Amino acid sequence: MPVAAQALAQGAAQENAEQARAYRQARRKESRKALLLAAPLMVFLLLTFVAPIGILLLRSVQNPELPSAMPLLSAALNDWDESALPEAEIYAALAKELVSASASDELGSAARRLNFYDPAMRSLLMKTARNLKQRESTDWAVTLPQIDARWADLDTWRVLKRAAQSPTVDYLLGALDSKIDSSGAVVSMPAEESIYLQAFARTIGISTSITLICLLLAYPVAWLLANLPAQQSKRLMLLVIVPFWTSLLVRTTAWYVLLQPNGVVNSLLSGLGLVSEPLQLMFNRTGVLIGMTHIMLPFMILAIYSVMKGISPIYLRAAQSLGAKPLTAFVRTYIPQTLAGVGAGCFLVFVLSLGYYITPALLGGAGDEMISQLISLQTNQQLNWGLAGALSVYLVLFTAFFYFVFNRLVGIDRLRFG
Image 1: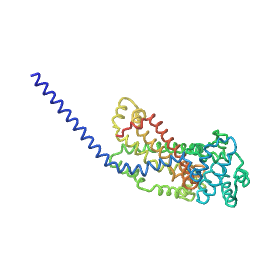
Image 2: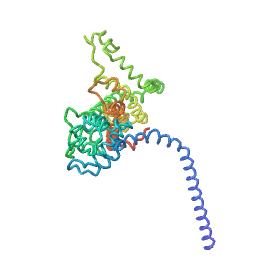
Image 3: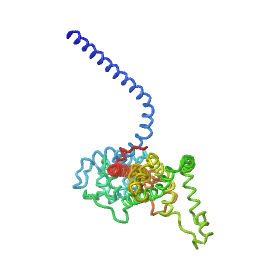
């Protein structure tokens, strides 16, 4: 019997092992099928979302213009120690590649890039390139300063060397209103040239204001939706969801019509005798707050409502049956149970507001520019993709930082919606 029992146990163990192996194989097969089904979507997201963002962020440290237009000069400048004017070979490389870059139309991009370091560099390069077509020389270290005395200035060559270095921190510093001076030290921009730090602070301030306003307006609406009878709640929920079916540009343009001096709002206030002259509701912070609140409010309502819907009314009745007043029961019993939805809604609205563009651009004024508008300015008008990439890097870092803060406060990654 012991031998038979032992054989029986071994057979059972072997059978269990085979079943476990078959189960693992089946799971791996199902996982491969799921991966194959999701692969087209993953490739699509990679090509249309992740890759463009990654390329833009990478531009914040790339410096390709001068090395592309003048590779020999860039290589020579990398070995120059900046203690004295360059050797004659570097002058000769500059003269040769100024002519070739001008002929191939690459000089314009290099000159535009150098202009970000020194506004006079573009005119210097263009002037020198025009004069070189009419000159022959065997000693360019003498000829170039004759064309323009700045070629005998050490700072001019230092600017060229900085523009020839890639990767570079210049864009990242520029996005923080800082730069590297001629001695190599990091210094802050003059107050009249500092715009980006103020824009970041303004963006965070506007996003915070929008979040607080949406929270104050959304909480009672979400409570009403969660506690009304089902039929009435559905009708009101439809009013919350309808804005998602309307174009963002259309909604913003509607506020443009409503808030203008002769618009509906001012006409109504004047007709009721509440104001003697039209209120300035556009092209200022008021217009931005009104327009963005209208667009962000549904996100806050839905986030809070999804949590409130799962809270049983029995808790409030229990608290009141134990002697708590209705307000006390609501504050100490109901509100703590809704903090998950409040945290998720605040984070969602805040992060979306950080990168908002259309509404501030249409309804805001000169003092209400958010960082997204400056990124658009750099890409569409200034054509400074490096600075646009640097601003985007900091915007991503801010988003990650605030996610960490919200997560520490309310545990966003552990939220469950009932």
